[in-house]
Image (cartoon, rainbow, N blue to C red; front, top):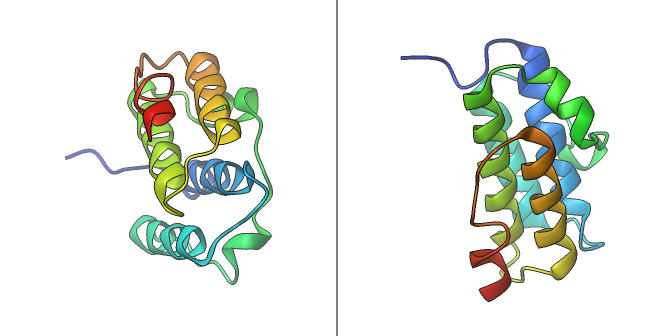
Amino acid sequence: MQPLMSSPAEAMAGLRAMATCARADGEFSDAEASLISAAATLLGVTLDDPRQLDSIDPEALKAALPDPKRRELALQAMILMTVMDEDVSGAEAALVSRYATALGVDEPRPTEDLQVL
């Protein structure tokens, strides 16, 4: 079984993508911070405060995650972040869609299902 991320740098890039998504609607909720903390634990990364993670732009995320499967995992984590506060904003859906395009991930959920939520 392939690990979720192959290095601490990849793990941090994925966590930063989640934090970027959490900020998209202007509010970084406790539920979003808890999910990032849980993901960090799963990935073997120690975080003091998920809210202190720097954002990451789509091109930097793409460069940090050369494996297409890991890009897809990062995008799926971003999708999960959009629903953590039970209110998917247009800004969050647009952000995920923009990252999907930049990462070359064929993911219909950002443009279809997220808008319905």
